[in-house]
Image 1 (cartoon, rainbow, N blue to C red):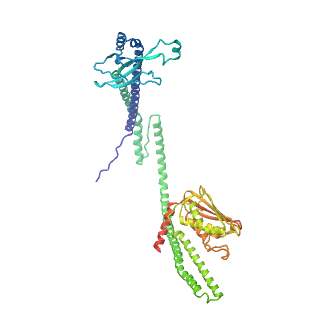
Image 2 (cartoon, rainbow, N blue to C red):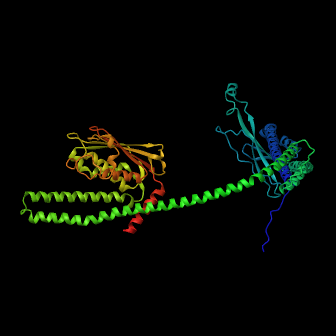
Image 3 (tube, rainbow, N blue to C red):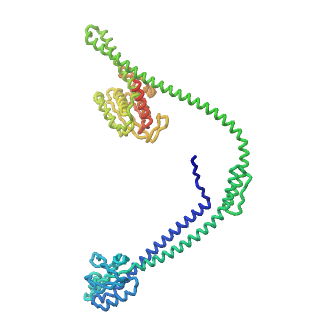
Length: 564
């Protein structure tokens, strides 16, 4: 048997203590770090300012001695700088950067080269340069300062002195190169760190003592409340909590006591309603059982309808194929009869033969249209992105002969790119444009206009399935003979015609095929017209097809191929 691991229990007092001490530690560390960082920056900045000030003062006092080459003055200036314990060395240089006087106040210190001089645009050094370096002998850090010594030329005319303040009446007569030791800086920083850490530890100690005291005061009533809560959880409602403080915990205890009183009353009510709940559960169980039986029967009926529809589609497909062979023989033998025995037949016999061949051709057209109608859902292609403009231009090229014969033209607007079956969409627009060319008015060249615009959304009754990214509305408008709008739904029926065959050829399957293609894509097609004023067909299609619809079409095609 494997021992079950129990989660280690930590009391609320321990959590409170740990959280408070953690906050105190983080706060103390943050404040100490901030103070130490600021102190280091401040001390270092003061040292830099001190060095710049000393270098500037030394350059001012040494102007005369460097200019005249007075060694005694130079020595006195160097000895005066020795008083400052931060200064490690001092060098006085002429304007050619040759050492005139140089002295190191730190034994064994190798005086470094002076910092590189950066001049202004006028070629006149004005700033006091400084850089930090490490002595290779003892590893200590120093800051080197270089201050130019500026001398004034008195042999210029007074007006020249007034007009040329920098470039003509001043020149660099030498340099003061001195170094400051960072040893005292590090010592002051270390002293400040020790003091800060001492105060930090004192603050942490006081915070921990205060935390432990507050924890005892706060958690003692909570422990009593926890003990009574365990008893109430075991079903004992006779205990209450007594807290002698006047704070939120006392309010919590009072609320808890009220809750216990209500629990007593609720327990009595629950016992009264238990019997009613048992009876209700039995009734619901019976209803659920009946509902499951109904759902199962409905599923069986749905599968039966689906099988019936599949059988009907398969039947139409097989019938269309089986009728093709005898019909071709009738047409072939009719042609042979005309070629070999046409001269032996009289006019009436030739008329009968011509009628038989015409009827055979109509029958073949009907079978072909019926086969195309049945293949809308059984022989599908995968949905792909289709540029409607390019697709309709290809359809127009296919109908070029009819356009030339009727003098018609097709006007294309801006059409979208949709997700659809390219073969079926091509058949859709070929049927609509072909009908517009066929049903044109006499002596009036047909004009067909195709426009489209996107819709934000559609109501559920306008589409047969869900969609993504909205719909597009495509309109095909012509100036043909039109029709009475009461036949707007009639014309979409299979084999439904509004005119006699001797007026306009056709089988009456074209528009029904269009509707079935549109519905297969989850859209709808409607028609509006008036006699003599042309017709307008409105097609609404989703811009992007749902994957489920495409997969359903593929499964139908697979089943059809397997059966055939």
